[in-house]
Length: 333
Image (cartoon, rainbow, N blue to C red; front, top):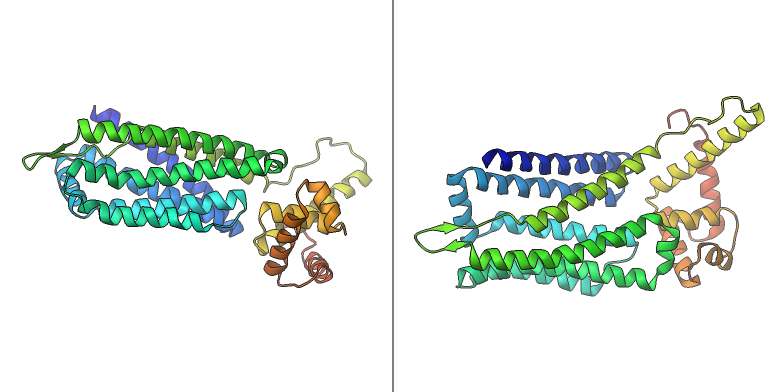
């Protein structure tokens, strides 16, 4: 049994470490906060699973940890607050929308709950009440995300990754309910909270499965991101010289656009807007081409102006041209 537990935990930690390695490597290259949030999320998943494994494998540590948890669950509280914060920011980075007042209210509810839940005198009810708000947070993110995508169907049409994220939101909702059911059964039926004996099952299998899904999804997404760093060689070796020159020009253009977007931390949606802006198209033409509203176009253009530190379109185009003239080589790319 111990060997099975050992192998299972090695598998989890290896999976989380792979996702962490991918995301942190991309963050070092691109300096995009989204990748930093992913890195922090899986770092805390590793911390959490390590502690859970120690409580399963070392009986003396298990007793000490359970006593600490019933008195002041400081470590678990840090884990829950940190991962909850990461999930909120990741959710809004992917959907490219601001964190709302309701989002903050749900997050504050989580913080208040993990602080005051230990004050409940009935032990099993205390533990159940302590874990429940985190699942409420994940359910909230799942339902609000699906509702947002339903009202912005162009996101799924224009961005294939958003369709995958919608599937991830559905799985989050399903497994959040399963986690609540599993916690309810385990806490009230199997955990022991007597003065003579204290034994808490700290692992949730449903939560592990959901985290595995997150890790696999992250690895698949980031592996595709890494492939974009490689400049593809021409498929046909016997192309004419003119065709090769056109290919090189396209490489340089794509490289400059990529470097410009990374320097100013432009989101994927803002990059789409910028790409059409560089074609000297007006707001209505941008709206028609990207199948988004005029208001959304204006909002993204305003965000681009703020990030690039310009106030009008001509200044943006001039800034891009100056940047392109200074970065017209792909030797280091």
